[in-house]
Image (cartoon, rainbow, N blue to C red):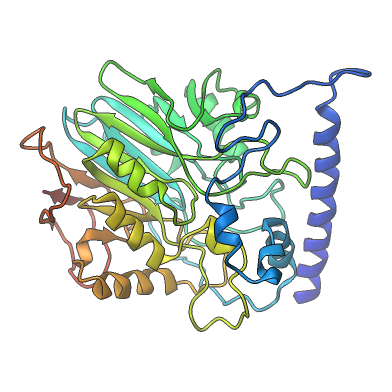
Length: 410
């Protein structure tokens, strides 16, 4: 079995090199032709590549060996390491019920599909974040990280989707087969960070809004989408590192502000997002991959800079001053060295350590809708306050979890 796995991984690496070469070749528009980027340099773009404004000072505080271990090193390490913890294959999982077509005015319905995919229904629009229904997050279907938990909603049960939001171009977030299937299903609009327009249009989705950090577009007369900063990186081949932007999204409407972080490390941008968009009614935040305390590795390296574990996610939750955070990026694809339940267990412990209630930051059940009713007072602000949250229907109260048809009130 191990021999077959090594052969498969070797073939996969060779395939990556091949598609990287082909991708590089397609960038040439003709003999002697050079296409120059037109974006102006900024605090996160140097004229050629995008970068994280806060990363250099973070890396400078680490050891020289750790600082040299950039994300490319971690990709190769992921393929070659053999000490992965075993994850159980979930065979007893049943998908959730088909979502409603539209939600009542002022209500907010959030249905976690799994990994970074959420169906957000609010103010007459249906939104999908980083849609991913494939069995593997990989450029090929026969090798690469395999899905351990099935999607919480069957693809055929999706209601009409008005827009997809894609946070960056990594394979577990920018899944071409799913996006092509959505285009065939009638989805005609997407919002992406700078540099991702051509790849998105190649899926068949015709209308693509390409945004820089803090830029906004109007989805409907009442709903606005803003791309906000994240601390991460981009790459789909071995040679296109950081040539496209990454980010998160804030969706604003009469139902309130919803923040979806995308992939990100812990960074001061959470406080800035809170300052600009307070109150944030709900935040969707990743809690993995991360390195549990028992993992035997000398230095943390680059991974904590571009990802958050449960401890950092709880800090982000407090920075955002939101009454409810919902966990993302756990128990679907094995992308880190944590065990299957580690992220959820550490999240519960971290909430307790910070004297936060278990229902302030929940690890949801995939496919089970979380319903947030209209705000009683549109001027209500969560800043500096701790509003009570009651998960009315079926909440167990024993650690972070949400049971079917959870109704959140605050």
